[in-house]
Length: 124
Image (cartoon, rainbow, N blue to C red):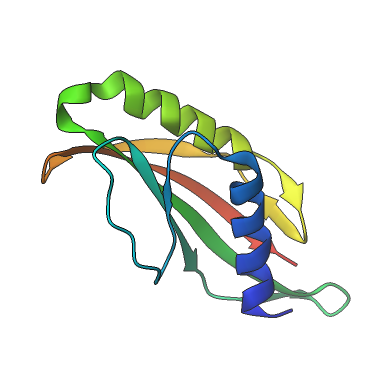
């Protein structure tokens, strides 16, 4: 296991399955467009030993920020959140096992209406 393998598996799945908006990637310059866009982030959790036979499980959270212009209404943000959640919801790929995805309304800030899609995962 290495942390880059986890990042690669998750980012490649999103990149392969997402075409609805531009994507802001971690630590990559991104001038926000005037239209909707998303930001993908990974939040690592505390690893733990499952059993001697199974080794170590690496938990984390896939966090997808959905941003639409404030004047666009909540519908567009919810549609994009649904599309983003479907990519990871209860899916298994590349050693990553995702759990149920859920969305949270963050609200308006700096001219954007924001939601977050959260997907807990474990990598083995």
